[in-house]
Length: 126
Image (cartoon, rainbow, N blue to C red; front, side):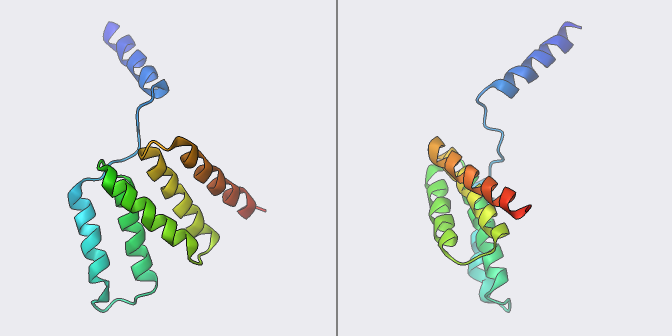
């Protein structure tokens, strides 16, 4: 009984704590994504396939434990945000930017990106 109560209290504490529950990536995942981006010229079209590979790499970078990777992911995503894309892609980029800024401990900027992504979400429902 005591073990169950402690387990419940630990769950509540971790829920309200400032723990980071976002997924992490390791250097192997990032290296695989980098190889995928570099290898895009091997018979795949440069359009959508390359964009998808770059988005996967950006996702891996902003979820890295290494601050340099996170910053590189943020830079890639900011460049992608300037390109033309649909609202769904823009929302995905804004979300990933929010994750990157969160990991970089730039919380106000992270919040701004989330607010912009949510604005796209709500405007897309009308």
